[in-house]
Image 1 (cartoon, rainbow, N blue to C red):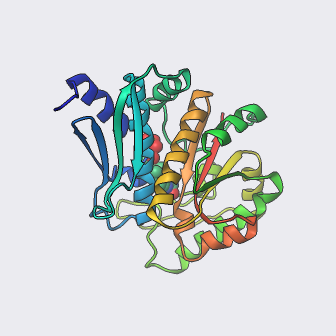
Image 2 (cartoon, rainbow, N blue to C red):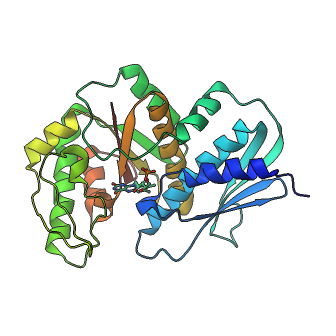
Image 3 (cartoon, helix red, strand yellow):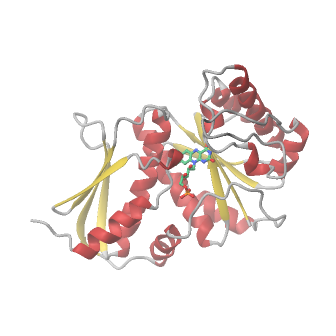
Length: 287
Ligand SMILES: Cc1cc2nc3c(=O)[nH]c(=O)nc-3n(C[C@H](O)[C@H](O)[C@H](O)COP(=O)(O)O)c2cc1C
């Protein structure tokens, strides 16, 4: 029995395609079967870190769930449901009908407006209540989403600069397609790339300037309890929920994982911030 109309298929596939993914690789397959949506990790993107691919699939799961709820379906999700098929990230089953909540509808509509804002934000503070909503939206077993305190900005700046330095010293390191410094300091201090992805400018901001820029923004650090797939999928789910909640509040956002994939940058950040678990991703939000 196939219970998917053509318009259902259109809505659900558009939803997953609009999820954020590492280097926009969209490393998932979506299969609509009977009453189930199955999201699997597409293998073969070996030049992107596996953690980022699995986190991307988790973001896709959030969008599929929201689309199904918006279509009036009551759903149940099983993450990594089949140990014999580790690539099967999630099964989202329709178990009945239900009116979508207003939050589901708002986040569903935010999907089409979400995009990476890799530039500085306006100098307008995000209201504490909005920040609290975003942090609440990211609440998820196996994941810690921590708001960076103002006095922690120097620690993040140091780790970002450490990571940039390691990349610079070792030509074997994969360089970021989207240089991270531009997220905070679009007016300078960023590297640019020619078509064969060689660095052509090499400025990096000093630590104090970068820390000041970070401090002026709202930044969340996402850490997973473990490096297991299950916690990476949950991280992706949490990040996308938080990001859509920010978009719904008319905020922009961008994420960074690349600097945390360089050598021991992630444990360094965990250590500096006293974070439990494994830092996976940084989400910056602002107007
Ligand atoms: C797991 C993950 C890691 C990402 N890492 C970075 C990053 O390090 N730097 C960056 O600029 N964007 C990063 N992104 C954002 C993607 O590049 C972006 O979502 C994708 O290019 C699609 O563009 P959009 O977000 O505007 O739709 C990441 C996204 C995901 C899901």
